[in-house]
Image 1 (cartoon, protein in one colour):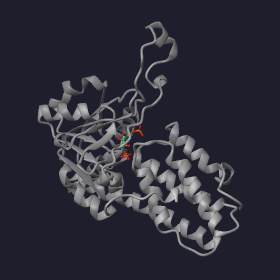
Image 2 (image 1 turned 90 degrees about the vertical axis):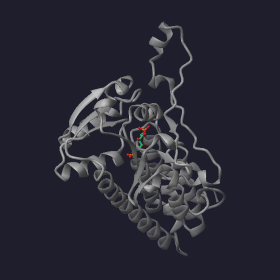
Image 3 (image 1 turned 135 degrees about the vertical axis):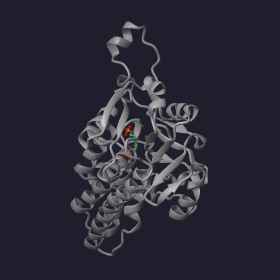
Image 4 (image 1 turned 30 degrees about the vertical axis):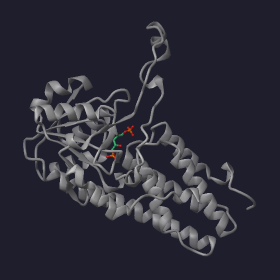
Length: 321
Ligand code: RUB
């Protein structure tokens, strides 16, 4: 290959996955990480590069396409970083098989981490407890699923989670698990918090100071939970730890389309107001009781020790090299 890789050197399947992440066909931090790693695997498998340098350049280009889809879930760059870390070889075939192994290992570890996290989270839940959920988090659901498998009977208040109503996915999954589900509008959360034993939320990123970055509305829910004295825990695999925040970077909050909030016709009927649609918010650590990871439960303020151990002093961007 001559020169820098072009869009054409990134295989079609990578563009399809990137589009699906951007449009939220593929969504949720863990699911995005899994899809992005697998897409790098497809890039490696289908690359027509004739020499190792071209192969690596194309892999970096594919990673950039995936990376530029959604900015808030750090699981996406962490997944890319994981795959790049172990890419070794002096021929295209060696490189191809090393990416394949790296992707398989990553996806395997993601599954194992979620199962391990589920067991830690389930220890907090007692038979007869009621939880409240926000959005749709597979890490949260892993905790509930394990508790149910242990024979605990649970009820749930499920917030619908405007504007995309991911709470419907949560309600459906919890019903399948045999949990007694009550769906509520987001603004009803405070009204029912006194009936709740645990608020369970996921995370797209956890900052070095223990702040939880998750679906918009998490921070308001956390403040209300604290006011009501209801424990709130965040279920987040360590892939949600944001290494960039160790060196002072902040987490970019995604702003999504106005059309998710209101259709153009209705907007016009009410005078075309400015519409803002932030997808995530930041919950300060003082409002979170614990962060549940596959390595155990941490007070939010101490998560930085785990972050340093796992990520060193910061983050690199091997796809930019
Ligand atoms: C999803 C969301 C979830 C986290 C954690 O937002 O905020 O709580 O991603 O999910 P969106 P998981 O729907 O905008 O992607 O535990 O599955 O990683």
